[in-house]
Image 1 (cartoon, rainbow, N blue to C red):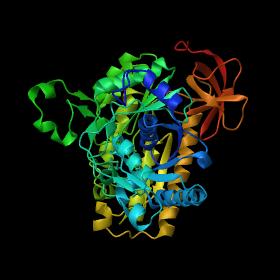
Image 2: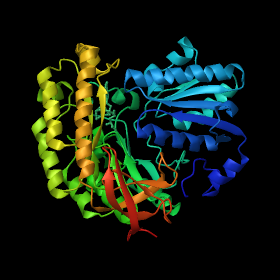
Image 3: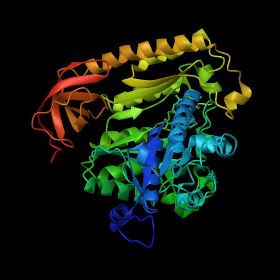
Length: 482
Ligand code: SAH
Ligand code: F3S
């Protein structure tokens, strides 16, 4: 590992040595998107340099951190319940400190600390490098807050400490923040402006993961298609870049190709794609490299042009359908998943029917479906009344979920009788005698373990399915396996 988090200690010895020396215990919980789980690995790395080893036992922790999500009200309620629990434990362990990280820290700033007094430390998503100072502050009995958002921070120079890892799949973040300003979404406020990470540091992290035995990476960003590296700086300032910077810039399809070529046997995934920014270049790059998985998470949120416009999603229903058609033309067996919001302000029954008919058109493999939750500070909360009654939101959401279940089953059935390449991720949750893995299209496959091992690519003959899982039998190692 060449990346160091403390310049006084060089090279790969850093983490092992400091981990051996470390005396204090860090307990960290993460909520929300994959990016938060990835950020927690950066936080664990930074704190490893400050004398902390992670523990899975809350009771033995010196420092308890919760990496939080603000995307819907329910996400915040869940975190608040955890904070109550941590405070209850803290009563009998006065030396224990509690800190809040991530989007709730950014959204509520010092409120949790000064008004509600339920935490000792508040750290926003761009301030993790300040953790050594902030921890010193709380060690000395003072409260600590840093919620400054950055124009440059990508943590590209921090080697994450992999947490809860299966040793096979890992996340690598490539962008931070989001410039899209969807009117319902709190992310642009909590995670700041969009910036991209140096492609060399992305490739280096992927190389290191391969050397450590990982077999699959997911490149992460709120909107990966918008990735643009031109030597640093915000995406929105690209126009001001020099000619040389422009000529040597790397976009998302360029980055995908770099990563795919650097590790031709590593599976590459990415998330999340945005229909307004996704180019066919990206789809062609996926088709060109065998190791880039045939799977796209392509949230649409609504099938109604009127609602898409009110959401500030900068594409129409027709443009989205054309993109789907092109994806299927270039990659016929591409897995496609969605995010949907039911009951956005002003949504009529007709708008809702448009969502259902768009779903019929795409027949997504799976999806993440939510009832609209008004978030303070967003454009929708300022300009639009949250006027769809809860009962109607719920009913529409149920209809969307039921339709998705039908399509999921339709999609899993298409795999029956085929032999698919599967990367073994670990034991099946339901049976210790079975492995669980995924196809390139991201469908979960469960099959008897036989002589196979975690991290191997195996060919699995698909015999049966539910709407969520394929059931099969391994028939041999894949060409790709070692
Ligand atoms: N581009 C991001 C989106 C993050 S939010 C990404 O990486 O996936 C994830 C999903 O939460 C969104 O796609 C949307 O469907 C949902 N969501 C966001 N804000 C919401 C709100 N206010 N109410 C309900 N669902 C919301
Ligand atoms: Fe949110 Fe839209 Fe960005 S959903 S994260 S503002 S693409």
